[in-house]
Image (cartoon, rainbow, N blue to C red):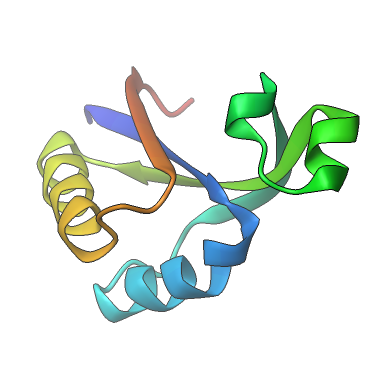
Length: 95
């Protein structure tokens, strides 16, 4: 079966909103990881972030068929427009 991994990167303060959204859309099998975004001061908001050169982020990983990836990414863009959310996808095969 052709599947895609969908990675959703976001500022950690949006975690609960995204969990609620994913569950309300019927997605109940996904993974969450804490991560940091490193970057230039222009991307970092608080003094703590600017000193450490990183911001607290999270990533959700979902494994979906391509049709669901497109539908979910479109829904997230509409629902959470203006939030600092990045989405990526790539094809995978289950072993």
